[in-house]
Image 1 (cartoon, helix red, strand yellow):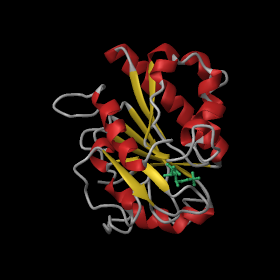
Image 2: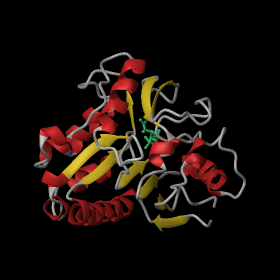
Image 3: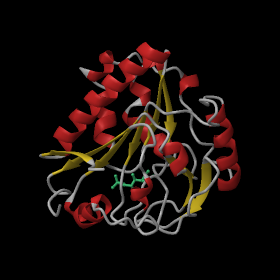
Amino acid sequence: MKPNIKIFKDIHELSHAAAELFAESSSQAIAERGRFLAALSGGSTPNHLYQLLAGEPYRSQIDWSGVHVFWGDERCVPVDDPGSNYFQARQALLDHVNIPADNIHRVQSDTKPASAAVDYARTLKQFSAPPLEWPRFDLVLLGMGDDGHTASLFPASPIDPAEPVIAVTANYQDRPANRVSLTPRVLNSARRVIFLVTGLGKAVTLTQVLSDISNVDLLPAQRIRPTDGELLWLVDEAAASKS
Ligand code: 6PG
């Protein structure tokens, strides 16, 4: 199946498109199901999007009282650690919008990864879409590392875990190594998955991930194939320059 890719001049244009999609997804989900379940990504790429959503025109386009945020992955660090995806989203977005505190479903990142994973699976189950034991997220935001990882699914990650949430230890750049990650079966249950990928440093990997040659062990981002949902790649010209 040909991937659905949209190419933008730069991260600014890309982030505005992502903000429009976030607002559109939230309106549709709240209208249809009374709430919008979104899994946020970490890393640097989505930060611009989060800042846009915290301001006009997007902030007032979104009914934050119906928005529930989760994380596709989290580093096991204290909640006020700059390496925390939760901390980043709070700083850039959540502290600036009227989202109820009870709608923010963070990973217990200040506990041991294995127990944080079990605990987060319990959190997901509270929003499960039977027969699934986890929610069908209305929107999952994902990034991609220059090594082909996504969320905290790295080349060394377990093959296809049965669990919805796993504890992972992985070294990537100078980021915290101990993590918790949603697994492909949860991510692939989503109604809409959007990858945000920018920068020349990811261009070769992006070409490999988007090619017809499947190599999911080496390129975990290829594991993301929604079973009954939309997969969209928002990339900038630099990241698309080798495709
Ligand atoms: C994380 C992210 C991770 C990220 C990629 C890309 O916790 O770091 O979830 O999967 O999306 O590493 O990161 P950048 O956007 O910083 O390139």
